[in-house]
Length: 300
Image (cartoon, rainbow, N blue to C red; front, side, top):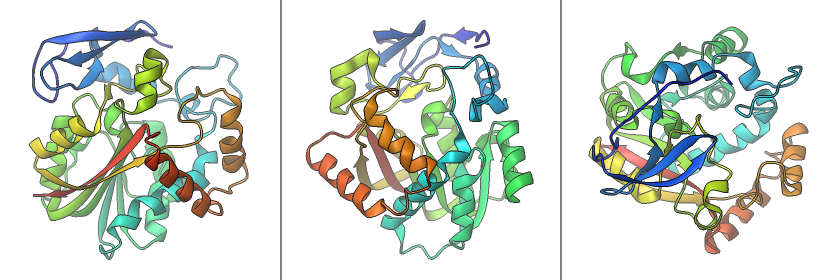
């Protein structure tokens, strides 16, 4: 992995500067704000340095590369079945929205965005990766921007729905991004934010060995309360919180419990087994085993 420069930062939620060290992962320090409880990297990588991590084909497909990077995906394209399942599940609570303009923030190669288009949405995407966005435009014909939300040249009150799926934890300033999205969304439009929940039972138990401490990709580690407050302070009102978990929630990425998930991805069976997965997620919620959370909020 290339050298990444870091800088000291204040808490992006409350602007506080007092924090306590939680643990060190791959030489990066994870801290918790003593004022509001937000967990984040500090020192934090410079935005331009961390952006370079996502700009190679190797990040999205490690096959054929002799030196494996700890970051990225074995083969992102293989996740099509999973991403289709995720897209369908995300839209279930907002079925009252009869399509319209949709923006996917952190759209990557556009696989999930392409499914939204198939469902009838007028789709737009944005991602900082040149490689991924060129794929989305060239291979899938999607309307995708390379860059950050704050620099999108689009009209105010433009979108009916915004999705941010496992994206907000990668963004150098979630507050600035959410403020920019507020400007781009219609009054009453819905934003769906999915991320990992550091207040779940497993991260509290395994601490620095939690599977979602993917540093320096992940810059922030939200809880339900810190994410809800971040949305509220940037002009959104949360109306639904959904916890999710998988059979691998308590495990590392290389355990045998990951094998069924890899099998479903490889043979594109995620959609077919969706009812079973939905039931497993419901059971996990009842048993409080979740380490992922999704918030549904309206633009005030």
